[in-house]
Length: 583
Image (cartoon, rainbow, N blue to C red; front, side):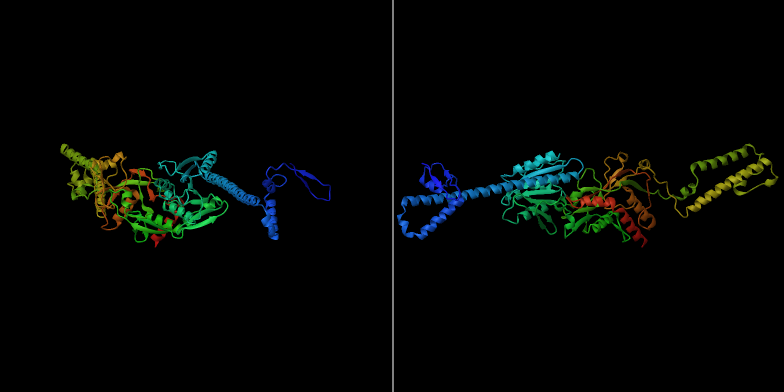
């Protein structure tokens, strides 16, 4: 059957026809258009309840079967409303979550683009997933897809696979971190290996799901800080929150929205309140203090560096033998951030900073021995001069023996001692000329000989110094070295030996070392009585090599020290040393 509904109105009445209702109970719940209206249903239930309160005496006249069906309908409608509300909330949450993930993905793509513009060459990015039973893998895949479109070299892995050494260090790292309940991530050996191989100044973004535990960001920050990763930021996936960190002590800053690049990856070293660093050194020419005022070049380099960076540098003297490697020597000491002494490396080390100048390696050898009395008498003239003198004497004597009537005087006695048998003015012209020439010749030789002997009073004559490696080889002299690598120096093959002492001393052995150190030792040996034996330095360098300064793994000081020593060190160091020397 059909039901007609008359609607009173001042205008012309209208008639609405609805579909037939097969169930009397549903007919009471459905309105005339056949659709469920929660507002109308709620109004109808309030009216029925009000009528029941006004006429309670008629309640016993309601059919029991009809009341039971009405109760069931109310329960069904209540469940339907709850389910619909829950579905709406779930839909809104899912939509908001998807929007948040899309925004974070776009933000990461923008950050990568900004960093890529500041980098020259191939830009490498690691995508790491530290998540058990993750449902967010699609997000990393979306990030990876975007980065491929930006021509970024992407390495994607999770914490279940071990790290393989690679020459492609990351320029940026994105980590999808698990929930706080996933304690296996903090204890994972593979995850720790991946984090340990992230450079300390590499921009790192950690994506994580926030929970009711407010300590989750701090736990992640402490985990990364303990593994020397400092330039990182935490981005929450399920809410609008980004966390950045400052150290010494740790402080956390919370951002909303999407901050700019410089707000996330600022200089962590300048934000430290406690800036204590430990430097180890060994005593050598470049670390000792001269005259209690002049610092060695290497020590002055790091002292001025600490002052300019506003750091507190604690120096620790260590003792290493010549047979120990640097790593084995420093292994007993903990907390060392850098090594002051310059070292020479045979293999590449990414934690070392090259010096700004090449080291010139030269040889210093003792001067020749003192001459004996007879050697001193013969030294004024060379062998050729003595041979010429002897030849003149022999020739003059032979002439007098072969022609006894040619000269009336003995020419040698006359020229050397002034003895004459007859007045020279009364002799022949030939005898006068011969005597005059011999007198002038021997007089000049006598003056030169006496001048040379007088000069020996101020400087004791010695044997000639060695001037080349060939001279050393001819004299069978052994060259001693300490820490300079000479494996590929063929010119010294068969004539080198290891030097066991901690420092070089001019005590009679031939030394191979940096020319600057040899010149300084020679200066003290020549001017300080009893300091050491007189030495001479060969004029030619044996070879040149580039020294390095070694820092601890993932040190924050390495790059800024490289920039400092190239630009800011030499002029202040020269001025300070000149002022100290003048005082």
